[in-house]
Length: 157
Image (cartoon, rainbow, N blue to C red):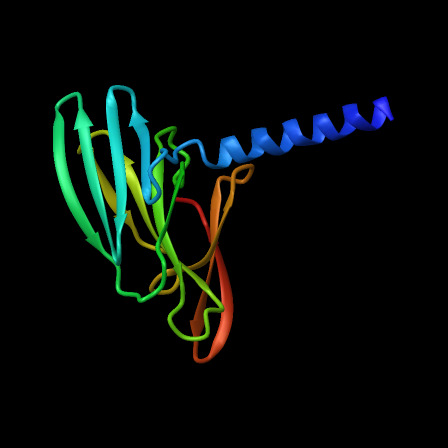
């Protein structure tokens, strides 16, 4: 019994650590994500309906921008290093407005030179569909449709 309790406690600790790592950017307020894309820079993303408000402040930068997303679905924000340059980036995603089969993402990467986030365009297709990050290969994989055929594209950014 005691061994089982230790195993359960260990599993709960692992699950809690995974949740913390996945949601480390989430603040106490729902729809609000705070993170530091670079040393001395703070970003706050707030989901407001079909828009995401971006506030960027810190060393030599003070900016507010509203990113409109054309969808009726719920928006989700995720923080990750999408171009593997060591700076934290973010994506805004939602399920497609049709049958809700695909996850559509807009990716924004932090440019330390410009001190702002810039949109990342997919190498294949018009948008990132079912975006997957492969950290070991440092690639992004997304789906796209050409002539009613479903294809995938893996690329480095």
